[in-house]
Length: 281
Image (cartoon, rainbow, N blue to C red; front, side, top):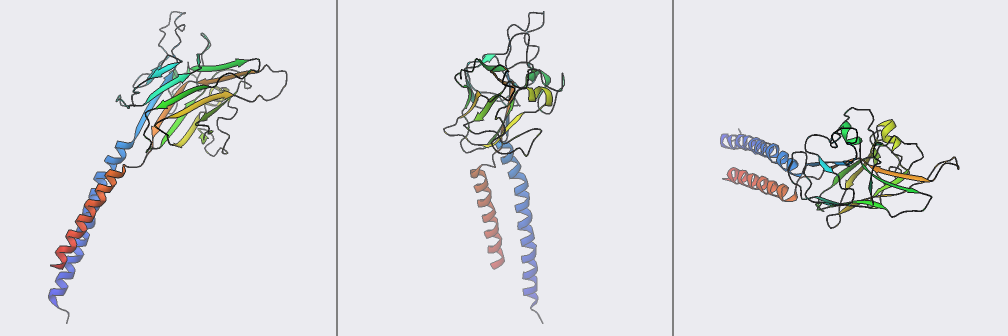
């Protein structure tokens, strides 16, 4: 016959093990969403408020999105402490160089026309910063440098480039020298093709935009550059590069902070040791 005391102790052990597992599960459900929420961050940026847009009696700011968007009207210069979608300061800044405003009276247009789509309101596509050259002389590269990033985090950077111009107006877009990972319409785009010879007509005609995923920074900075593109035939088309940035979304996509995860594991180990100690006694 089995020892009744042993049977009772085994039953207690089983129930205690279930109790420890329940405690760990409850702790995980409470702790990890908090940590994940702390590391999640979205920044929305609208480029361009053309001072001449009011020439027909319109409010010059009519094309600015509402809500917690960062409206960047100075096409060259710096901005500090961009806000996130909740209106809170992020400590992330931006430095812009060698851009111009879009031609007054001929702004870029987001497709579908006059409609919000995904995270992009229609107003975000109406204006922007442009980089152009005529005559085939390569100009200085236009650039946007993001500062104050967390080197331990990963980010997704999305760039909207839209303009109702001809398809041969093209430029190259890179982030720290790398082409994008995909576009909205082509999630399986071949490596090294996203942003290569990009035409703003893709945004206007197709409603497409560019992604850079799993972006990490060095010394808190990454740089988006616009370079002269490659023109398709026919050979009699004018050499005219157009690079446009209308809007941008920056999403922090990092995992829970290591310190928080370590604290959780320490607490879990304490619970397990405490439970085993009770079983031994």
